[in-house]
Image (cartoon, rainbow, N blue to C red; front, side, top):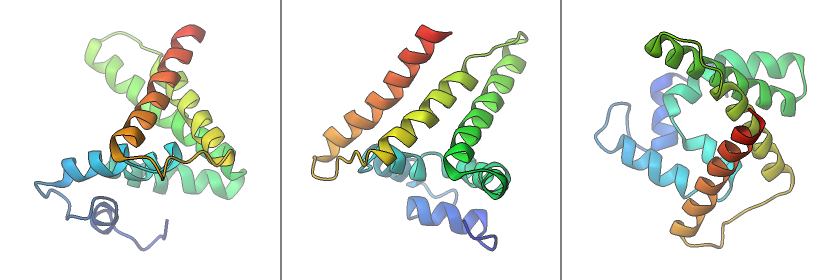
Length: 145
């Protein structure tokens, strides 16, 4: 991500509409779920969150470690922040999102480096494949933790 891109520009690039637009959520869901790969799913999912993770976690990590490692660390940090938020709401510690998101990061890398693509499939089948990766990572995490 270029250092000069703003949040507003980033969201418009990912959703096709300006930040706060009424079609922003619909476009995010349509683009992310219908992505041609699980790796590309994350390009469109929650662009505001992605902007800050990319700028403050992924880029600094990528400067000091291999990109595959930076991807896993970025997913782990995102999970840890989700754990923290839920822990604060529930007023008790929770540790599930960190390992779950770390597993998802690993699946992102496996899908990318194995070049697993669903580009020839209809939208609904691409959506099912992307959701299946999320469910699979949840299931794997449930088994491990």
